[in-house]
Image 1 (cartoon, rainbow, N blue to C red):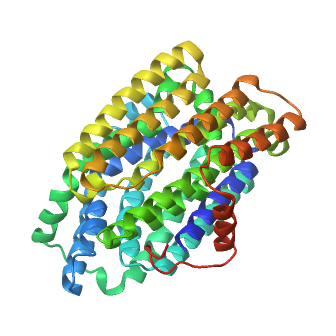
Image 2 (image 1 turned 180 degrees about the vertical axis):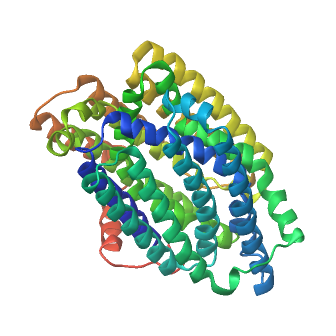
Amino acid sequence: MFTFVALADKGLNSITFFILASYLTRGDYGKLDLTTTVMIGVAAVAGLELFQGVLRLFAGENSLDGRRALVSTAFWTALVLGLGLSSGLLIFWRPLASLLYGHWDQRMLVLGAFWMVAYSVASVLSVALRADLQARAVAISSAIKLTVQVALALWLVVGCGYHAEGLLFAQCAGLLAGNLWCALSLGGLLGFTWSATAFRRLFAFSAPLVVSSLCVVGAQQGDRLIVWALLSLDDVGLLTTGYRVANIVGLVTSGVMMALSPMIYQFHQEQGTPKEIARLFRVYLVGGFALCLVIGVMAGPALVWFVPAEYYPAARCIPFLTLALLAAQASCFFPGLALASRMKSFAAIQAGTLVLNLSLCWVWGRLFGLLGVCAAGVVVQTLSCIVYARLGHRHYPIPMEWKRLVPFLLSGGALLACWVYLDTPGWWPRVMFLLGGIVVVFASRAISVAEAVALWGQVLGQKRTHPTAA
């Protein structure tokens, strides 16, 4: 069910992008991405990352009153602090708008502030549903959010002629509709209560993660700011275009991550869980690499078919962006630091990732332009994942088969880098690179033919009922 939610979200957003690209310029997408990037950082402060504490502490709370206190306290804290920070942003809207957009744009900043509050609240509500294992409610909430966002975006942008502000308004409305459904689905878990005791427990776990999350935002989305500073708002739009296509790799990453987190926190003491995590990691890498290769090789024709010519240069960025997204989510397979509550270590890793990402993006961006920024993201996210794996292994050992995985990762990354460097047109080179990807997977023994057949059978309908069943 979690995977289905991710499939619908990423798939429909990608389709919507191709439809709206003819009505929005690269600058419009650049403006939208700069706004949401800044507001995600503000939302991390507004919500104090209390939703992380809800996910961690919910399963250990046996009583309904205790769970209600956790969810309600996190919800009202995020809402009140979000409204307070948004009010502060609007007081200084003119200098902030001039800094972000180069001119005064009150509508984008007001909508951005509202989006920040809705996003902060959505983090708490959706995590509470996930922790309560209400998969159907999560799916319905996502469907409502997507339906409202797509319908309004098409009406406002295509029908009414609005630009970035129309798309941002649609996102705000979709978040609000999804939040209302989540609140109704939580039922007795969400009330008009606020517990100081629950807040202290949540804050003790989540406080170090505020800095960590800000660093995550900077590490994963700071490249937009670097491109904006070094190049132009149109180049930010090109990068945004690349990400919107590359986000299709989220068909693997988001679904696996959403399903993996509850499994780890609830069944990590089971004897077979580490082995199952190692198996899922291999599946994640192979499936992710397959998607990265297909998306990277086919991005050029897809852009030619569906979007105006001004977006075509984004095709060369997409292979690097897919690899960066794949590496960024891989750290969830190494839960040792989280299970040991080593939040300071988390914060230190993310701070180091932020500094390295901004520095490398700046240097490579000046040397190689937009492609340099994209390649820097791959290097930084991979190094960050390696650090998570090494430190997490001390607290929660996972039997990863690195002798099989390292050759696979090196050869797969080299194959995609060659495609970007050669930039070969025509269908035969694309077919040859796709066949080369198949050879890389099986020659490196990342997965056997028997495992691939078994996994395909599971995709077609077989269901797993327990994380250690394998």
